[in-house]
Image 1 (cartoon, one colour):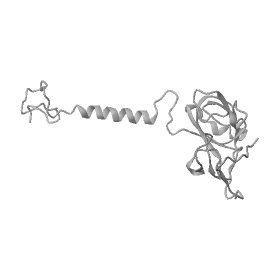
Image 2 (tube, rainbow, N blue to C red; image 1 turned 60 degrees about the vertical axis):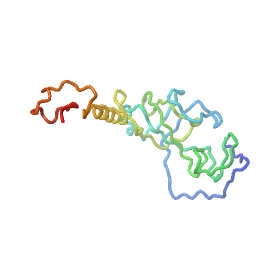
Image 3 (cartoon, one colour; image 1 turned 90 degrees about the vertical axis):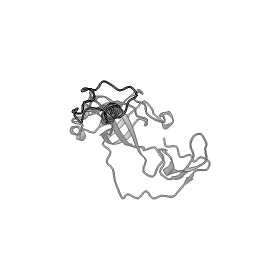
Image 4 (cartoon, rainbow, N blue to C red; image 1 turned 135 degrees about the horizontal axis):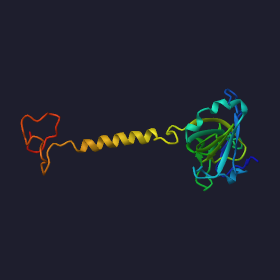
Length: 202
């Protein structure tokens, strides 16, 4: 059931919901939570197992999805109000504008979660990390930007490794040392330029 209660300080407007765009529901999401009050504030990848069930039409679109362990799940928050311009949080703070909050009550109540993919069963994905009510309409699924294959390294981790290695090497570019190391040619003038120089080789 939709909760239409207006909290103290909240402001609703009369809105005709103009239909200048449309979305297609491609499936539904099954979760343990039957009401909005039961839903967690944010999904956790070690949370309960949830099921994303796609319509048979989109079965082929799942080809290759098992390569990824993190998915961005986009869904329609069908129980949320769409007419609030000022809202108050549950903690009773002062009213704030809708666009300064991450509240599900929005002009276009689109929700998104990063879910951990556990298994693919025909047109069903078993995932963890969702925070929506049971029966939520599904809009889209895509691999997370920070994704990798199940056995690989994420792009961000790879860039970090390369950057860290470069910085480590840069620290050992010898210019002048307190205790000079043994030079390959013992300060010879014929030492190749690319060899590091100790404090006595200028």
